[in-house]
Length: 128
Image (cartoon, rainbow, N blue to C red; front, side, top):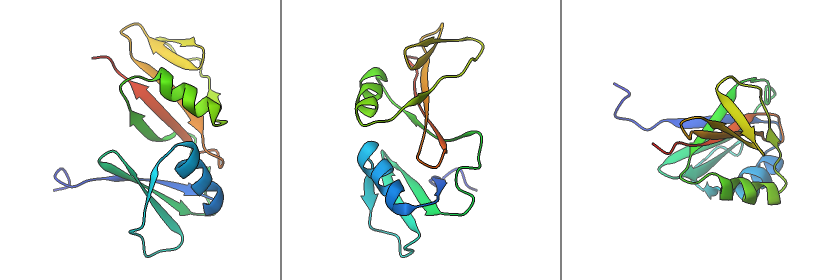
C-alpha cells in the first residue's frame, strides 16, 4: 500500500527563521514554495522532501531524525564545518572515530550533528 509512495522526513523546530538559516543556508537545501501552511517549510533533497515545522516539542527526540546518503563524505563534512556545523562524537562498537567521521572496518562512514534545536541529523557514505 505505501511502498509505491514517497515518504517525507519531518523535523520539529522552535523557530522557523532560525531553521531556515540552518537548513536552507548552512545545509544548502532548496526551499520549496509548495506549502500553504506558514508554520511549515518544505525543502527538496534529492528525490525526497524534508518538512520542517514549528512545534513546542522541538528537540525532544534523542535519536537520529534525518539521514542523508552521499557518495563522498569528507568534502561535505569540511563544507559544513566551514559553515559552523559541529559534529557529535559517539563511542560505538565497530566504529572508529577519525576526526569527525565514524568509520567501520568495511569502509562505511557516518557523521552526526545537531540542528539549532538539538535534533540529531546524520550523513552516511557506504562504499558498497
